[in-house]
Length: 253
Image (cartoon, rainbow, N blue to C red; front, top):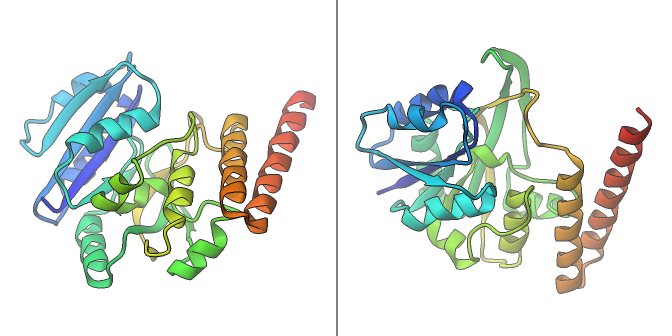
């Protein structure tokens, strides 16, 4: 098995079929899709079970923490690599093939891509978000910002398991993972400029909320202490200031 795609969904039935279809239509052979339905009260469970495809495994969980549910899927994954996709996003048809070939050719542990933004209706907004391409660029950025779009990444399974999988708090689990992986200089990061994932922007996302900023600042402070790193300390302070600014803005708006 080359790739295990992991999709965790909580009340994501509105876009879930599109996300699943985009995975099942991949041009790469030898992949599986593991869906974890957690704490959902909408149609997510029924939708996940409506596909008659042997490549799909559906798990359920009553723990509403993404880290736990990601690890649950990874614990049964058979692929050499873990591919992430969110229930409201869409993978381009050749995403797995191109990313797998690049990782194998260049011995990459974590590979992300640019993402093209779509709106609630699935229409392209015309915006593309890009990330640093090379290992040294990514390692330089990681002290001050997330260097990957999490739903776009392909991660070598053995590398992911070696650091204990996903940890962290309720938010920014991916940032915590990159920081822990970055402790090992042998881990190779990269991003492709081609947007192989469509990232949906809508009102129900948690990105940028107060707890997310607070989580990131705590991860960076941890790394500053463990690595005796001034850059990580400055990054932690930056996220503390972002958290305070957002809290004050919310209070007076």
